[in-house]
Image (cartoon, rainbow, N blue to C red; front, side):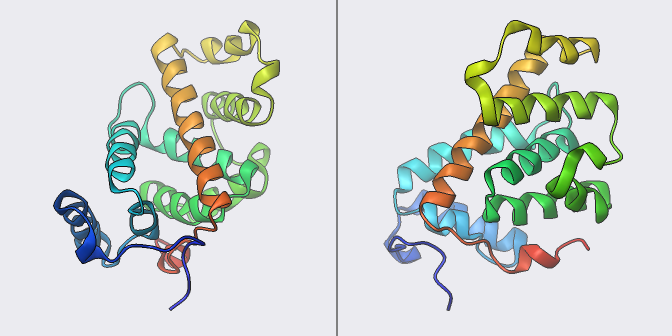
Length: 187
């Protein structure tokens, strides 16, 4: 079995009950245990708190659609070269859109993707936030407002981009590997 982290991953039976239940539920849904859950379980309370926020941020439609949030996840992860998140979130985007080309285009060069002006504005903001947040100014919000985004939507965009910047860095720094199943899903 291939190592999925540079850290020692705990055995499922040694985890707290709530963590085991979360992992069991994911295994029932996917047919395998996503490595992010198994690897994050090295600190079970951190896993549970991260998962609650991630799930809240990524699973419910608020100001941004699920498609838009997954596009942000893919483009931020491409900027950060996060193998794990690119494998998983490109598969989720393929599932949502039934489009096998869009995620790959976003990974390579989102400027060439067949996307709306609103989606391009979202991705431009997320990329600038990823690479040069220290250079951002209030005027960086104007292209978003021109596309009809209100302050709540802009805040949600920033949180999604921040979530993936955090997660990408964590996964990259600890050598987390994606499950091989993600690469072929929804193609």
